[in-house]
Image (cartoon, rainbow, N blue to C red; front, top):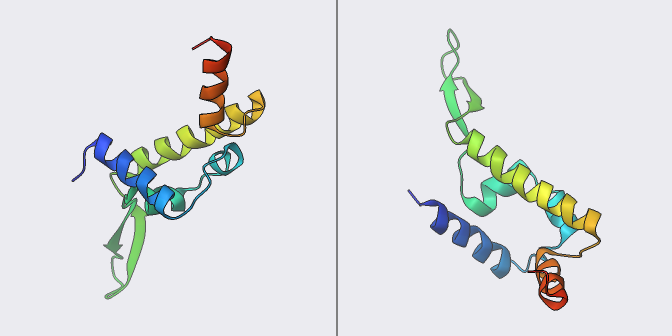
Length: 102
């Protein structure tokens, strides 16, 4: 599997190649599906349903807590940026550097 750094690089590169504008409003609405797609994390496992041959049921897998934490981190970051009036994380960092507070 990938380590945390490689997983993050993979996700950011995928967002960039896909032409995704990573602004505050997009981040604040980040979804579980986007975590699965961008970070290539499998969040659910299929398990057979007892007494129903050939039927499986999806249930949260061992990586679900990680995916939830990533989604919450991105959504909270986007919400904080919106509350500060910043259009994106990059704009926020540049404003801090320009003001000399970073």
